[in-house]
Length: 272
Ligand SMILES: NC(=O)c1ccc[n+]([C@@H]2O[C@H](COP(=O)([O-])OP(=O)(O)OC[C@H]3O[C@@H](n4cnc5c(N)ncnc54)[C@H](O)[C@@H]3O)[C@@H](O)[C@H]2O)c1
Image 1 (cartoon, rainbow, N blue to C red):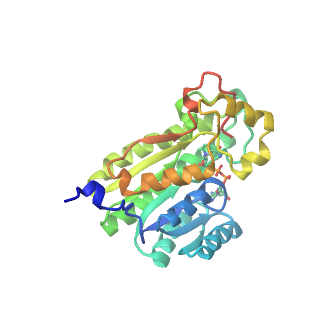
Image 2 (cartoon, rainbow, N blue to C red):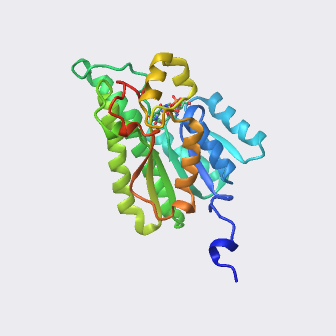
Image 3 (spheres, rainbow, N blue to C red):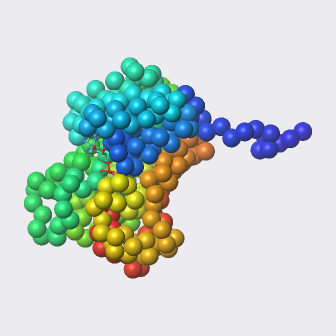
């Protein structure tokens, strides 16, 4: 008789499950939505820009997947509640929620002493507040459903070291790591796993367009793997963390940074 390990195919446990991905109209979020769909999820694609959300959802449908666009600004509590409810109404019980919206709120890198309150509040709101509001609404729904679930927050490799000139961003992402730990502890008994993934500088369209080539080369050269993270690698990672392969993983952040956190010669402001 064959043992269980050789006789059974690997089941990711994601077939037919409903996944919501915020900020999935572009970049890393769009790639996460693509990979969760490939793993069998039915996907709600959120973005603040209707056209971007519709385009990502249409691409998934064209590939034979089930997907809907849910337009909402995840910085606004009422819009977050509507986003989660629209997802449930369109696709059914929510199983995987990926809180991907973040970035430096389109603010330039700025020395600490030149920051002002508007800048600080904007970046904290775009990252820590928005992610917290999403986690609250998603966790409420998952608890009401009573079938557990997975919440995956997108953090940053910036949290492994000081982030000069990006101080509110680094602090907000470090807050997301702690938030992830705490919610995991509180909701673990109800079968809800909460994890974070922390990308290093990732070659999204935006990074390709806005970073000077010398800067990209310098980051690549300073990473132990001599490469940069590709958006699709974060899609793969999201599938792993959301799947039953990671069913014992909760309350931690997992780096996907080509080893950047190990580097002693990392260029400044490598994470936009
Ligand atoms: N790109 C990188 O190098 C990198 C590195 C580390 C961490 N990250 C993190 O990864 C996540 C995604 O980054 P990205 O580079 O793919 O960003 P991006 O700017 O390329 O895409 C973000 C998407 O989110 C949408 N969005 C922005 N604000 C929103 C809001 N309030 N509500 C709903 N949608 C909104 C945008 O319209 C856009 O489609 C962020 O949390 C970022 O901090 C990125």
